[in-house]
Length: 156
Image 1 (cartoon, rainbow, N blue to C red):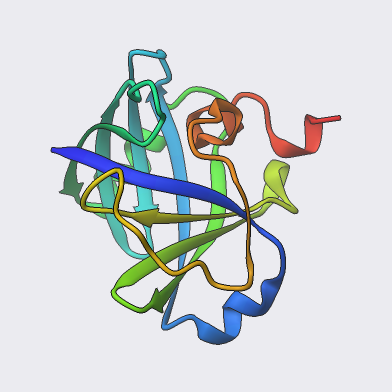
Image 2 (cartoon, rainbow, N blue to C red):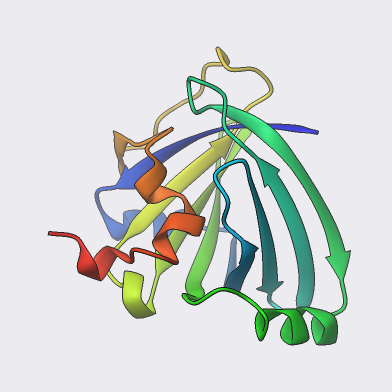
């Protein structure tokens, strides 16, 4: 399956008033090779394992495969992950026909807030809410796999 998404920084916390769902996420990476990443995630009380391929040249599209696993299996696999566990609260906000996922990071990435919107095609248009800031699609430093290695609080 191909995932097409755009990423943005978030300029205010006003998105919280629009959220219809809020979930705590803990995730780690079994592999952060640039050709493929393997992620383990606890999302609420569910576990997931995800494999993502390398992004295309625009940074908009990449292969993604995800499978739900038990919470117990996810907790066990998190213990095997590379250093740098990601913790965040994900807010879901509906804007017209799109759902924005806004991640408010904690721990070593405290202060970073990123919004993502999944699209059906790379040229699909969408409404940009007022709280949406600079686009960072394709900027590797904002990928969770990179934030696990070089957290936001180490940036200058």
